[in-house]
Length: 146
Image (cartoon, rainbow, N blue to C red; front, side, top):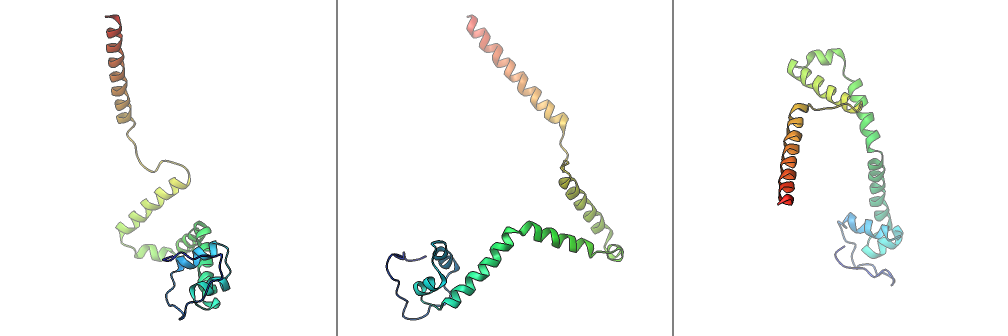
């Protein structure tokens, strides 16, 4: 909110009903435990306007809470809506790309790797690091003897 509002005193409505009250202001006041009527007095508009704007926010919060399930349902519906005729109409490169993407997603869901890693290269790097550590330890050992 632009101005700090003292919530301990009785708020006075603004002389004219402002337009475009930032939703962030309404959220801040709601999170302080104020009713729609109290918020309406502070920002100078009708309580039905506040209630309507916050109701939209409640719907957004419900969507965010269940977003994974909403997306999973949409994904299922999209995949189930594609038939053999739809697949045949796709360009061959799009079919191959789609199969590759779905293969990666299947492996991810099954907890399998989704990218190839060179184990040989990793072993070489570890071996180099061990050799360097041994060399440094040997140098330290020689210093202790002198």
